[in-house]
Length: 195
Image 1: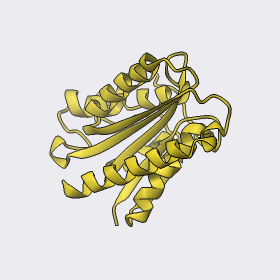
Image 2: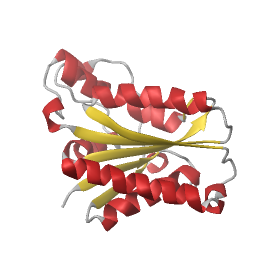
Image 3: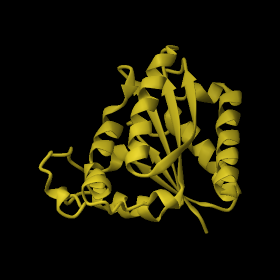
Image 4: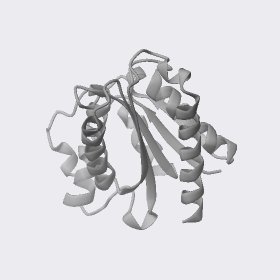
């Protein structure tokens, strides 16, 4: 059974971005995939300390919940990340999570031994939700995701932007947005399975 690693970064449990993520994942489950949903806000971990100890072997020396994430990503077949927009970019939880992949950067570029190879052709998807309707905020968040995916050898297989949703649960009042997330999940899984 294939596994989709789903990363929910919002501090709001069942908030707008997480609700859309779950719709995306429901399509994967309907296709027979296992979904491994991780809520970053429930994790206990520190920010990257820029110690560069990981340059020796590509492994982070901080012993916290991130140690559970690295093998999950290595073993999953695809990745989806959902984030709210905060001050025109990714939220702090997700940025701190991404920064802890400095060890993977060293594995790929310093040691030339990436944990996921380019040949694996791993695919990733990004879901972004913002209260304001400024497209550039979601685009800014997407650029950070592009860099992250590149460094962990995942191809950006698609993205969805949802703008103008602020209050928790506001997305539930837009059935078309939920349908868009489900369709995107179905299309993404179909694409991954066709590779």
